[in-house]
Amino acid sequence: MFGRNKTPAKNTKVDYRKERQKAIFKNRAGDVVSWVSNIKKYIFIAIGLAILAGLVVLFNNDQLFKVTDIQIIGTTRVDPKEVLGLLEDIKGKNILKIRTVDIEKTIKDKYSEVLSVYVSKDISGVIKLDIVESTPVVIVISRESITLLNNRAMVVGSLDPPKLELSETENLALLGKLTTESLVVKKRFEDDPVNKENSNLWSKAPPEEKQKYVDLFKSEAQQKLDGYYTLAKDVVAQSIYSDLVRIFDRDGLKDEIDNKSIEFVLKIQELILKIPLGINGIEYKSGDTFIFITDTGKQLYFFPRRSYLDQIRDLNVLITSGEYNNLSIIDFRTEKYSGI
Image (cartoon, rainbow, N blue to C red):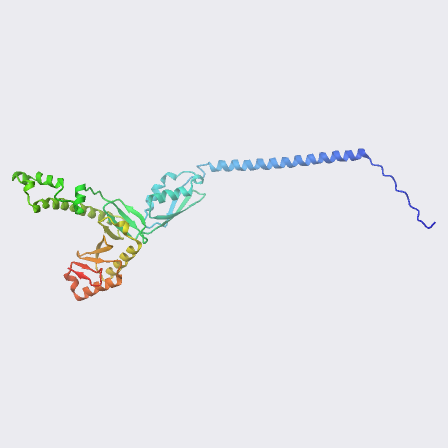
């Protein structure tokens, strides 16, 4: 009586035929979208391949990208013309195919004084090289080599030394190891026309007569060595390194020269030139001694382990007092400097 009348729910009839048609249409539409999507993908791939093929063709076009010029900056010691000659074979080649690391290696292998090489390539065909050198400050002349050293005593270059031919006997004579007991000394005595003519016998020759032939070997070897160093000085004088401080290593001690030694030599050289005194060369001897040879032939001995200022002060005292002119060899290696 008090209840509300409820309208019964209508039964909805599902049209399965239409639903099936909708599903079929939806599937076909999805297939079309997928097909279009695939078509776009293939088009993009084709375009990419075409671009890639074009780039490959361009990359291999040696005429379009050939090297037309090589420009060099930054060199002071290294001859730019030599570098250009070294790289002559890359002229006309495809600049895109040339590796900058190969150019850098070629130059550094040839020139030990080159610290680094910065290579840039321009699409116009120009290669630019910025060469950074490790500047040499001294040149060491020894029997086997002419070596350039920087201020850290590192080898940064070299020059071709003149030829020096010394026999084993001559080397022994220079080292003071050749004696009258040597068979070559005896043979030289016996081959001497004077001894043959006078029937002089080796067994009866006095020791001083035998020693003459030892000294003869040494004298001849020394002449060859002096000639070598004269030629070596000419090699340096005719090079672009003629302004460097020259150290003559006659005893084969160049491996013992360190950066402190080089710093010491440069300071002594600078102060001596301010006095002023002319220096023809510097000889390095065992015992860490540097002998400065003046243009008047005087020999000034300096020692890196004593203050260079004290040694130059002693030199100035000798010059001021007038004693310097009377001496040919002056030793500043100790506080009690001496001279003869």
